[in-house]
Image 1: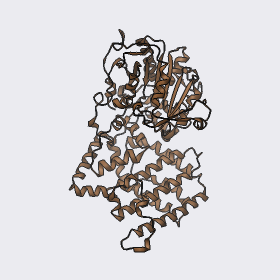
Image 2: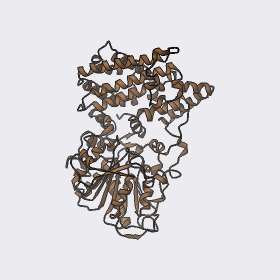
Image 3: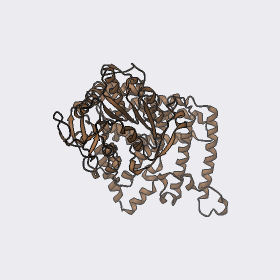
Image 4: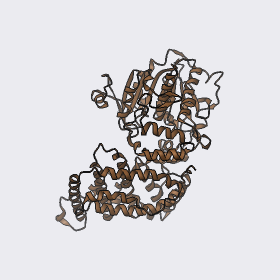
Length: 616
């Protein structure tokens, strides 16, 4: 029998007593670990005992977590077995010195100490720069400031313990991820009893903040997620995803949007966007002033876009082959028929780029020459270094998913969104826990976070194929190792010109991994490295002229570091560079079409269409 979909309320009901027990155990381990009279080396292995929680994991939600928990425990055991005893002793001595200095700071903070404490570092300096403790309330009351400073010291040395694990230990990232969850969760700002801001607000509002906090909590339990923005402030098609256009085709996988031209003439060769199916497409069309969609249209391109359906129970059998054949390849065929062009330009973003790449190699294997150019935005095709997301993909975890949803079922969008948020737990989880549930505040309206919370489900068969063939076994990079739609995957068959964008601070698609695409395809490649991260680095409007990017005219060496050493930094947005690259690939100028589609592909409904509005 397949595992049932995890239930948020069941998890929440069991998590509270587990969290209390976990907190107590973690505090005990921290005291032992950094006790100057103890043996830190002996205590490292005790981290595994943190999971000796007696609360039963007796519901589907917690059962689903067990492969991840067990995998993490195994990672702890192996990673810490590689730590040098000598380096442990040095770290222990450093901690003892800093702990003594912290106690001196606490002593200096006492009233009427006079000249005896002159020159001592203040308690406030121990937590300087941490926005969780930036409020004056933390510094006006000694006990709260001391609690925060002690937490900061312990957090610092907990992270330093991780630095003792050799870089080549495979489990290091998994251990770092797990420890970061612990460290973030234990901040005194997360608990009412140790948060002076929340206590002050309770008194100032005469209890109203507590009432609001409970209302926020109950509302989020009903939603099954922590609210990060005011979701009532946005509506798809009204104040996000507003670029005019029409749906001209739809099937069970996607709707095809053709955008209305804004120039009198357009290039004869259209371009097709393939966004990720893990999120909704309108990150590319968030607001008029930062819309890549609107920008491309303004540059005289006829733009089509794939708007993926948000899978429901009836779609739980969809496969990766289905997304390629009925999704990407069908969209390419439709655009060719509407435009009457034998070849089109294409763009894939993130997982959309991976889908596009496997579609292109499938077409090439069939002898179909349909592609004029390819743009990959922050796309992984070579999965040796998978960045932060690699912590979620182990053999045990993939097997568990294959057994539960591999033959049919859904990977809930809320689970995916939670996984992404956990990569930055302080900013994307605990920040909202504190504001929503301790202070009783409503989250502000923020379009990016609205999009981030508008999650999508994934069909189980498609999802587990993706995990095993990419993150786990890296099969796309070796010709013939994977098969898609009956064709061996060989990225070397992609011979069209390629524009490959990576972003320097991307924690989801490391730029050094995205660079490998340059050596997997056979088309002429222009590799560009943008500033910032996975989203902000891509959505960098040209007219704002912010940030910068790097280019090199010295070829594409094997090593990405060698490429960067010769790269030139260019101020402004990569959009300008890409627009110049794409200009001669849009063909001759023709009169902009007066109507969307053609006799076969008639307008079905205005953009953004129905599919993007469907909730997970």
